[in-house]
Image 1 (cartoon, helix red, strand yellow):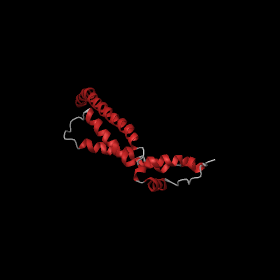
Image 2: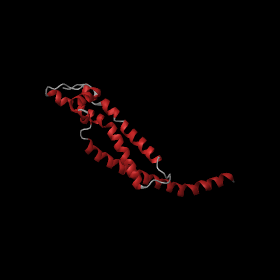
Image 3: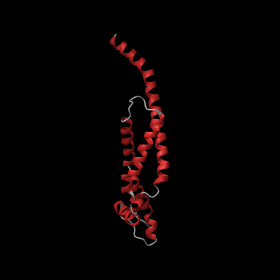
Image 4: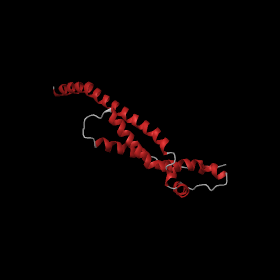
Length: 154
């Protein structure tokens, strides 16, 4: 009944949402680089920096998530006699016109609780695993490389 166009509903906002992890990793690296110590990052620091980075990324891209959700649900509302939204920009304008700026961020708090916690844990684990791999590589590969260098020199 909906036709092939329904398969692409919300694609624009989905493509814009690709910027979320880009922003998240950019902010994480930026904040990590601003630390006083260039030593290994602690688990607590990674957790906190990861949480802040994800919060910033989520706040900046949340209106796109609102638009995406509304566009996906637009088919239901069009069956009820309401005008179907035509694209992300039209959807965002409609939300802003009817609910103001607050409408663009309706539901942000639960989303932040979910995504910030997940990202903070991910960055903490990433840094710990990365450190372990660096240590393991140094302790197992360094002697091997030294032996090869000696063998090649002989």
